[in-house]
Amino acid sequence: MTHHGRGTPPGGGDEASAGRDAGASWSLFEPPDLCVGVFIGDISEAEMRRMLTNQRRMAEGKEYILVLTDLSRMTGLSAGARRCAAQGSIDSPVRGIASFGVKPTLRVISSVVFKAINLLRGSNSAPFAFVATEAEARAWIEARRREILAATKGGGGAPRPPGRGAPPE
Image 1: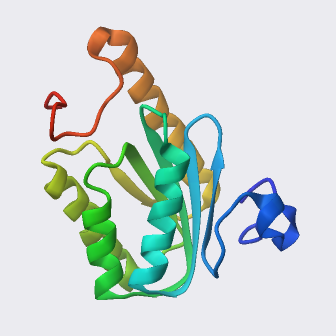
Image 2: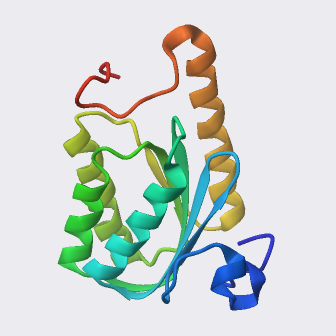
Protein backbone atom coordinates (compact mmCIF):
# COMPACT_ATOMS: atom_id res chain seq x y z
CA MET A 1 0.00 0.00 0.00
CA THR A 2 1.32 3.52 0.61
CA HIS A 3 4.57 2.43 2.20
CA HIS A 4 5.59 0.06 -0.57
CA GLY A 5 3.68 0.98 -3.69
CA ARG A 6 0.18 0.12 -4.72
CA GLY A 7 -0.30 -3.58 -5.26
CA THR A 8 3.30 -4.51 -4.50
CA PRO A 9 3.83 -6.50 -1.34
CA PRO A 10 6.53 -5.44 1.08
CA GLY A 11 9.77 -7.29 0.46
CA GLY A 12 9.35 -6.90 -3.30
CA GLY A 13 7.33 -10.10 -3.66
CA ASP A 14 9.21 -12.35 -1.24
CA GLU A 15 6.29 -13.91 0.65
CA ALA A 16 8.38 -15.09 3.59
CA SER A 17 9.86 -11.67 4.30
CA ALA A 18 6.54 -9.99 3.66
CA GLY A 19 4.76 -12.09 6.27
CA ARG A 20 1.81 -12.49 3.95
CA ASP A 21 -0.15 -15.32 2.43
CA ALA A 22 0.66 -16.91 -0.94
CA GLY A 23 -1.36 -16.38 -4.14
CA ALA A 24 -2.35 -13.56 -6.46
CA SER A 25 -4.32 -11.70 -3.79
CA TRP A 26 -2.48 -10.93 -0.59
CA SER A 27 -2.88 -9.41 2.83
CA LEU A 28 -0.72 -8.05 5.61
CA PHE A 29 -1.13 -6.56 9.07
CA GLU A 30 -0.29 -2.98 10.03
CA PRO A 31 -0.20 -2.48 13.81
CA PRO A 32 -2.07 -1.76 15.88
CA ASP A 33 -5.31 -2.97 14.27
CA LEU A 34 -5.32 -2.85 10.46
CA CYS A 35 -5.60 -5.79 8.09
CA VAL A 36 -4.78 -4.69 4.53
CA GLY A 37 -5.98 -6.86 1.65
CA VAL A 38 -5.27 -6.55 -2.05
CA PHE A 39 -7.65 -8.56 -4.23
CA ILE A 40 -6.39 -9.43 -7.70
CA GLY A 41 -8.33 -11.05 -10.53
CA ASP A 42 -11.47 -13.16 -10.28
CA ILE A 43 -11.80 -14.18 -6.63
CA SER A 44 -12.77 -17.82 -6.11
CA GLU A 45 -14.19 -19.38 -2.97
CA ALA A 46 -10.82 -21.01 -2.25
CA GLU A 47 -8.99 -17.69 -2.53
CA MET A 48 -11.54 -15.93 -0.31
CA ARG A 49 -11.23 -18.72 2.28
CA ARG A 50 -7.43 -18.31 2.22
CA MET A 51 -7.68 -14.53 2.66
CA LEU A 52 -10.16 -14.92 5.55
CA THR A 53 -7.95 -17.54 7.23
CA ASN A 54 -5.03 -15.13 7.08
CA GLN A 55 -7.21 -12.30 8.41
CA ARG A 56 -8.31 -14.48 11.35
CA ARG A 57 -4.67 -15.27 12.09
CA MET A 58 -3.88 -11.54 12.14
CA ALA A 59 -6.84 -10.87 14.44
CA GLU A 60 -5.85 -13.43 17.08
CA GLY A 61 -5.69 -11.86 20.53
CA LYS A 62 -7.11 -8.52 19.38
CA GLU A 63 -10.35 -6.95 20.61
CA TYR A 64 -11.06 -5.71 17.09
CA ILE A 65 -9.50 -5.17 13.68
CA LEU A 66 -10.21 -2.78 10.85
CA VAL A 67 -9.93 -3.80 7.21
CA LEU A 68 -8.62 -1.80 4.25
CA THR A 69 -9.12 -3.41 0.85
CA ASP A 70 -7.69 -2.46 -2.52
CA LEU A 71 -10.23 -3.75 -5.04
CA SER A 72 -8.80 -1.89 -8.04
CA ARG A 73 -7.51 -5.09 -9.68
CA MET A 74 -10.37 -7.38 -8.69
CA THR A 75 -12.24 -8.47 -11.81
CA GLY A 76 -14.88 -10.73 -10.28
CA LEU A 77 -16.21 -12.34 -7.12
CA SER A 78 -17.69 -15.81 -7.47
CA ALA A 79 -20.92 -16.79 -5.71
CA GLY A 80 -18.87 -19.15 -3.54
CA ALA A 81 -16.51 -16.34 -2.59
CA ARG A 82 -19.44 -14.08 -1.66
CA ARG A 83 -21.01 -16.81 0.47
CA CYS A 84 -17.67 -17.60 2.11
CA ALA A 85 -17.02 -13.92 2.92
CA ALA A 86 -20.43 -13.46 4.53
CA GLN A 87 -20.45 -16.71 6.51
CA GLY A 88 -16.77 -16.54 7.43
CA SER A 89 -17.14 -13.09 8.95
CA ILE A 90 -19.98 -13.76 11.38
CA ASP A 91 -17.75 -14.20 14.45
CA SER A 92 -14.92 -12.00 13.18
CA PRO A 93 -13.67 -9.05 15.25
CA VAL A 94 -13.83 -6.79 12.16
CA ARG A 95 -15.28 -3.41 13.18
CA GLY A 96 -15.00 -1.49 9.93
CA ILE A 97 -14.13 -2.00 6.25
CA ALA A 98 -12.88 0.67 3.86
CA SER A 99 -12.50 -0.31 0.21
CA PHE A 100 -11.04 1.70 -2.63
CA GLY A 101 -10.67 1.31 -6.36
CA VAL A 102 -13.75 -0.86 -6.81
CA LYS A 103 -15.40 -0.92 -10.23
CA PRO A 104 -19.11 0.09 -10.27
CA THR A 105 -20.47 -3.40 -11.00
CA LEU A 106 -18.27 -4.99 -8.35
CA ARG A 107 -19.23 -2.26 -5.91
CA VAL A 108 -22.83 -3.48 -6.00
CA ILE A 109 -21.74 -7.07 -5.37
CA SER A 110 -19.31 -6.07 -2.62
CA SER A 111 -21.96 -3.90 -0.96
CA VAL A 112 -24.34 -6.87 -0.82
CA VAL A 113 -21.61 -8.99 0.81
CA PHE A 114 -20.83 -6.33 3.44
CA LYS A 115 -24.55 -5.86 4.19
CA ALA A 116 -24.95 -9.63 4.52
CA ILE A 117 -22.13 -9.73 7.08
CA ASN A 118 -23.91 -7.18 9.27
CA LEU A 119 -27.28 -8.89 8.74
CA LEU A 120 -25.88 -12.27 9.78
CA ARG A 121 -24.27 -10.66 12.82
CA GLY A 122 -27.54 -9.02 13.77
CA SER A 123 -25.92 -5.59 14.07
CA ASN A 124 -24.09 -2.90 12.17
CA SER A 125 -20.85 -3.54 14.05
CA ALA A 126 -18.82 -3.53 10.83
CA PRO A 127 -19.75 -0.40 8.89
CA PHE A 128 -18.20 -0.12 5.43
CA ALA A 129 -17.26 2.59 2.99
CA PHE A 130 -16.31 2.69 -0.67
CA VAL A 131 -13.94 5.51 -1.55
CA ALA A 132 -11.87 6.45 -4.58
CA THR A 133 -8.35 6.44 -3.15
CA GLU A 134 -6.19 4.72 -0.59
CA ALA A 135 -5.71 8.03 1.23
CA GLU A 136 -9.49 8.41 1.59
CA ALA A 137 -9.76 4.81 2.81
CA ARG A 138 -7.06 5.38 5.42
CA ALA A 139 -8.81 8.58 6.58
CA TRP A 140 -12.08 6.64 6.96
CA ILE A 141 -10.24 3.91 8.91
CA GLU A 142 -8.71 6.52 11.23
CA ALA A 143 -12.12 8.07 11.90
CA ARG A 144 -13.60 4.63 12.62
CA ARG A 145 -10.68 3.84 14.96
CA ARG A 146 -11.42 7.04 16.90
CA GLU A 147 -15.10 6.00 17.22
CA ILE A 148 -14.11 2.58 18.57
CA LEU A 149 -11.61 4.06 21.03
CA ALA A 150 -14.15 6.66 22.19
CA ALA A 151 -16.67 3.87 22.85
CA THR A 152 -14.01 2.01 24.82
CA LYS A 153 -13.19 5.09 26.91
CA GLY A 154 -16.90 5.73 27.41
CA GLY A 155 -17.13 2.64 29.59
CA GLY A 156 -18.78 0.42 27.03
CA GLY A 157 -15.62 -1.55 26.35
CA ALA A 158 -14.29 -2.31 22.92
CA PRO A 159 -17.01 -3.31 20.49
CA ARG A 160 -17.26 -7.08 20.39
CA PRO A 161 -18.85 -9.43 17.90
CA PRO A 162 -22.50 -10.18 18.57
CA GLY A 163 -23.63 -13.70 19.28
CA ARG A 164 -22.86 -16.12 22.04
CA GLY A 165 -22.03 -14.26 25.23
CA ALA A 166 -21.48 -10.85 23.66
CA PRO A 167 -23.76 -7.99 24.71
CA PRO A 168 -25.90 -6.47 21.96
CA GLU A 169 -24.48 -3.38 20.33
